[in-house]
Image 1: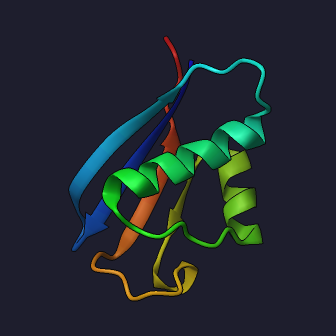
Image 2 (image 1 turned 135 degrees about the vertical axis):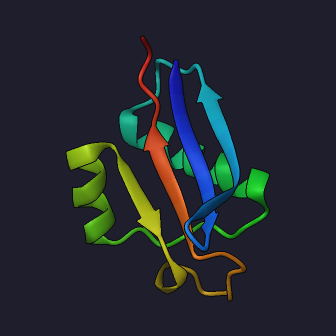
Length: 89
């Protein structure tokens, strides 16, 4: 089971969070991540952020990354949108 935890952060406080779950073993890791980001953005009613090289390296290294105003075309009502892989135990 693929789980992606999304958090909307404003003033260093989590305003809202949600865990996206997907059971699709036939999909690649990149496809699961893409669907997870889209699902979280739909849940939070925000646009899908742009993915920069820094997000790629950060996500591969620690399993999470943040998106700030520079990642969005439209104005955002929060400071950051953070995503993190939730490991099965």
